[in-house]
Length: 237
Image (cartoon, rainbow, N blue to C red; front, side, top):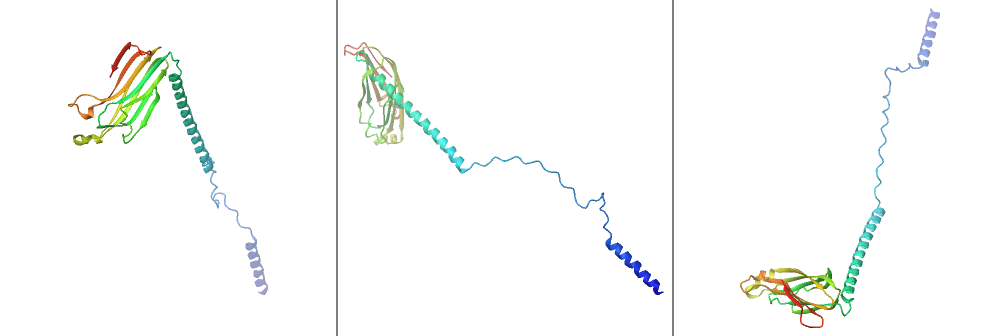
């Protein structure tokens, strides 16, 4: 009996050692313990680098330089045009053609002259602004040019701006402005004197509305430069 008990103890110890020392069963291939790794995604397209403050400054400086260059070019062209006009007008010989150009203001006291622009062949001859009208209005007759001019066709353009100076029954004119513009084409011929008066006047009569009166006309006279009897004369409206 004692030997039997000892045998059971040895068998039990052997079983216990076998269970503790045995390696764990292999994982089933059909049921993996972890999920499969996700497929790698396509690489993202590289984004454009944001412009730095230095790059923006450089771009603005280039734009500014371009604007300055364009402005310089415009100034250069204007100077060249004025130089050409001076050469054209003054470069003729004494035996060439002559021009006498006069501005005349025959408007009444209800109209104040606040701006004048005279152009010969597109180039300025006289430009002036007087917001009050107290300086330009009293110039009832103003000589603009008396000298030689290049022979050939020319165009004189006049732009005048008036504002109302209504008093008494015409106080409503104070809120009015008139922009008058007209042009005349003439030909400078050898040995001839061209006399042109640009006249601002009031058309109509006392029955004509004041707002409809301001107008420009050109009085032109062509004659021999020797002050002989004019060979032709005309008034254009």
